[in-house]
Amino acid sequence: MKNARPNPPAIRGRNAEERLANVRENIARMCKPARREPEDVTLIAVSKTHGAEAIRPLLEAGQRDFGENRVAEAQDKWPGLREEFADVRLHLVGQLQSNKAEDAVALLDCIHSLDRPSLLKALAKAMDKADRRVPCFVQVNIGDEPQKGGCAISDTPALIAAAREADIPLAGLMCIPPAEIEAAPFFALLAKLAHDNGLAGLSMGMSGDYETAVQLGATHVRVGTALFGARGG
Image 1: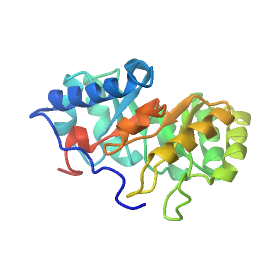
Image 2 (image 1 turned 90 degrees about the vertical axis):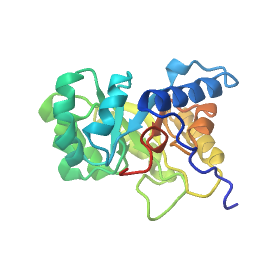
Image 3 (image 1 turned 180 degrees about the vertical axis):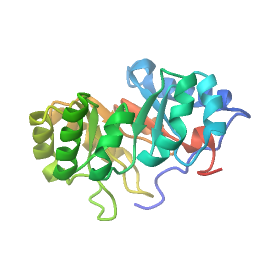
Image 4 (image 1 turned 135 degrees about the horizontal axis):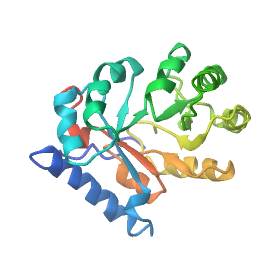
């Protein structure tokens, strides 16, 4: 069914503090019928393509979890900001190349895109070398879309088992549902896969569907547009 998925909400609030408060209020509102606590949902402000001048107001408003798509971009802009805000937690929410595993392990606090055995091996080697264990979400290609990253649903249990064998701390499962289709069934499927594999974390939901994701158990939502405006703007 096309066009069933809502468009990203209008950017409410004249400043970063108001926009952040609006998103947090929406998360809290959706937690109530699900009998969940808002504190159990980590809001990740997806700051990809946005510079320090756009990020700083959210930091000053109290936001501490941020998501980047590329390791190189995170390396360019976050060291300086972390000198002022040392308690920032950085999440990689985009695809990760195996040859960037060492850089990712050195810089990031969580990786949301573990999706293949070759990357698993590179991350395990990098974590052993750095003596640092970085929590990872296994990204699942929940809509079986060839153009998207993510592990095939049928291959997910084996990748989870391999990650556990390699002593990679697993935070849970992550997905990006197909566009222009109602997201709820895909979120529900991811929640079932996580439950069946003994994982509690669910990284799912973006600006257009994070409220639905919270209702269906998201522990981490990745919100960019509703906090920053249009990408790159």
